[in-house]
Length: 208
Image (cartoon, rainbow, N blue to C red):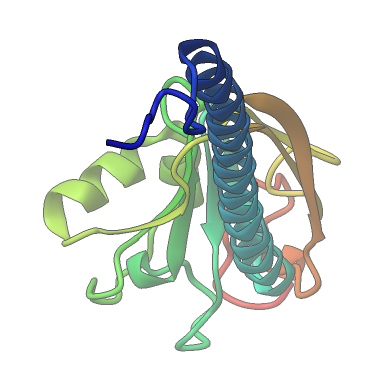
């Protein structure tokens, strides 16, 4: 029989070296894969949040630009006379929109009552907050989410309601666990100040 002792083969040391090299390569591949996945997730989160901010900006700028009055302002919401749909010079429930930030000022959503029938809502009741609670009891409400996750929402007006014509909405959004501050600015173009009484606390029946 031929002597096989001199045939070539892998020694134990060579196998161990090969395994070590292979483990280093696999670890590098796994690290690269994890980094790429994390970067992709971070990019997706940022893109999603920025898309929500753009949507909120478009909706709010359009709403405020075309509204008739900023009726009331509080720490956590704005009451807006969206438009005079029936041209009666009065605020009807279906024409009233609330921009809400919540008690913790951590979201932005619109609240309105599209199916409400027409009857005048007093400006004083809107400013006192009683109109909102009464409308929620009587009519079916609709909530439209603009930003589901944000923080430190703040409403700034150029003057006291209902004389205000310029609105700034400030809020923070966490993108990939990093906070970014945003600001939405809009001016009322069709301000219905001519419908206010001399004291600015009530809507009159006609143009004064």
